[in-house]
Amino acid sequence: NHRMLRLRHFALLTVGLVGSLSAAACGGDSSDDGSGSGGATGKPDTEAEGARPPGKGTGGPAAGSADVVVAMNKLFLGDTGFDGQPNAQAWKTMGYNLDGLLSTKSGSNHCKPQKGATKSSVQTDGVDGIDNSFGSNLIKVIGTLAPNPSAEISTALTEGSFTIMLRMEKVEDKPEQSGIKTSLYGGAKFEALIPDCKATPTEVNCSAPKFDGSDMWPVLPELLSNPTDINSAKVQFPDSYVTGGTWVSGSQGDLNLSLSISGYSLALKITKAVITADLSDVGTKAKATKGLIAGIIPTEQLISELKKIAGSFDKSMCEGSTFETIAQSIRGASDIMADGTNGDSSKTCDGISIGLGFEGVAVQLGGIAPAATPPDDPCAPSADGG
Image 1 (cartoon, rainbow, N blue to C red):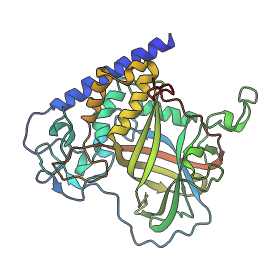
Image 2 (tube, helix red, strand yellow):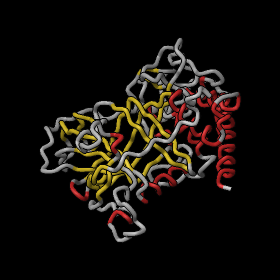
Image 3 (cartoon, rainbow, N blue to C red):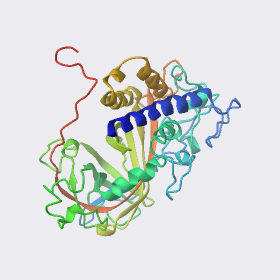
Image 4 (cartoon, rainbow, N blue to C red):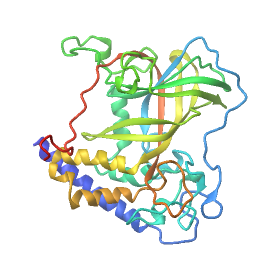
């Protein structure tokens, strides 16, 4: 039955977590020459800019006649390149150098790996110091549930299951501009404002989004400071800019991203997030390509979310040695400090770097969707103390 199938899938997840991350902890390459395998150059853990977002250019304040809203219609987790083709090394080019180091497996200027992990598993950067342990280590685990996670998530986006939207105020079709107030929105299910699509199948939002600039996408109230005011986005980038045709968020923000893969809904809290994308055109023809979301997932927060998934199948998984084995394996993917600092080998890494790629096209903000009822936490103590 459905429950048994999901339990079987969770068993696969358990095996994947322990197997993949234990293999990473052992280090697939035992050499210790300091060269790493991700394209980093220079002496071990050299402090360097590396892959950083482009700095602000010389453009004046944006003065367009209208705002542009871009909704993501493709998301790349590091298992495929921007061309959508499977590529186990794609993670190396997705993200940014978050810790300011060109980290290598023999470097000493780096936070201490968690118990069971080795420098080789967490100090190997991508190209030019890109930090992306999520893509390097955890995507292999997600792949035990879905052979091509990026394709599955992108399908969910194009079908209208969810999206992430960026509203760029007064942005122009110019390669250099500044002072662009940008707000981030969570897109609810495309049909969220329709009471019953079976009864009214011809309603516009009862079919998949067209992504031609005409879509009116409902907004999640959970990402609004005032759930009745669409202009009160919690995540804002007040001074984003465009330089060389690339839009850059400028300031960092915290993003809450929910990934649904093979029946699992995994909430990711990405802190210290920076977002960039090549922006072309404005209005209904606006497009974002080669987009990047880079930031840090606090390790214990990710473990807490996975515990909820485990407990939803079997409450006994909320505690005990089985889940603790999984949790310790996840801790082994920690490669950075959760506060974004690094370089202190006396501190134990407590964050997991992440880099995601995306593409987006123009939509319009729709109404505010009804607030979702948060699921019960199966691992929370009951009222009677049980």
